[in-house]
Image 1 (cartoon, rainbow, N blue to C red):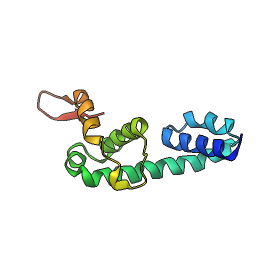
Image 2 (image 1 turned 135 degrees about the vertical axis):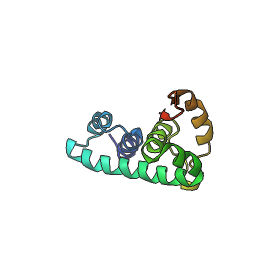
Image 3 (image 1 turned 45 degrees about the vertical axis):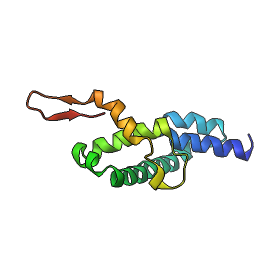
Length: 118
């Protein structure tokens, strides 16, 4: 496997945001299990940066659903839409549409309290 293929496999593993699913991808690219911890660091960093960037643009949504659920929503968004641009300010071009698609999953109790968004 050449260097370009190894880099592509590494990026695919990072953007998968799945802790265990990416290990076999890395191993097939010539990386050993010991790189898994490093991969997790990259994944956490990607998710934290994306959450922070989108929380600025979608502050109302962030404050309404809370940090934990917002991060889960961002994780699902990244798994579908990746991050084609290098400017964090451009990340959420289709995030509003993504949120609307997931609004059907919001459940309310009889008292009107929000239970879950994702």
